[in-house]
Image: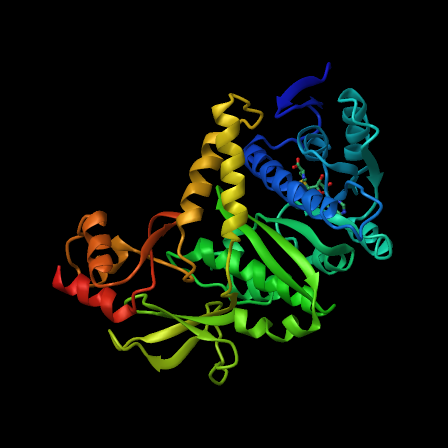
Length: 405
Ligand code: SAM
């Protein structure tokens, strides 16, 4: 039959009923990526224009390694200024046929170059001709693409990574998580942020092998996936400080109190037969239960707040001027607004879980927050959980408030 035409952002995509490559749920992911890449491109162009040592001014060279219909690449070409070339790659022959058609249909063939190969191969082949930006948007886990990505990205380049295997990352399968991400996941109210921190430690460990370090610009948990935006640059010296951005997490099996131990202080190993995170033979100071241990997690910053602020400003000015190319702009605005206020303390609690532990009534969220604040500590939400309490208050303060309620 006739292909259907679908509009998203400034792109129009031919959707053949037979193929199932288009995923409307990921519109938010693509919109957010357009917003991030736009700001990254602005910063990059400013830096280049202000550096007299750079004679040959040029735009960004981008790889979309797993492109499916080409929609994302076409949107980048049409919506993000300052891009010279986008390689839109997919391993599937029928996907690449779709990319070719869509590129012509959108008249972006001077920028978007369809390419059919294994993503890993494309990245290894480009180690001498690196990309400024690499976007990895696989089904499930991105691990197998990371080694190639960190090698074929330029210094101060941007890596965008999606992971959709949330069950694995959020503690349903800690053994599989270790196999895929080199970290043990935990079942926790804080699992979405843990997932982000597991993915970031994994990218950092790949980068470290090549003397590179990561700087997260934005790390987002949304719907059933996570998405991170990290800058990568070479620094042997900073690599050695990687462990200072890593920690193991201890969650009490009784009251679910969380403690983070910087890496290097891991107690001796346990032998466990069931597929659950190991239990550490150290008792919780509050309820005397043992701890479950997860990690390593990235304990460094999740976001560059200045960068987030700039994206918010761009969005606000678009809204004021009624330029709304992004279909999910309201949601992006709301999420970035929360992220801008997020404390940089890893992980969070959920109020109902804290009170259910002592079988008490749940105080109003605002009252509980004020109590933390009045005790001299900071408190915020996490964008990853609307019931979250993120605070720099020590666990003793939190439990004192709960018990006194
Ligand atoms: N980025 C797309 C978007 O935003 O519309 C969606 C990508 S889709 C989730 C994943 C794609 O990866 C599929 O089209 C699949 O054919 C492709 N793929 C899977 N393994 C691959 C590999 N090793 N190399 C290149 N492409 C691969």
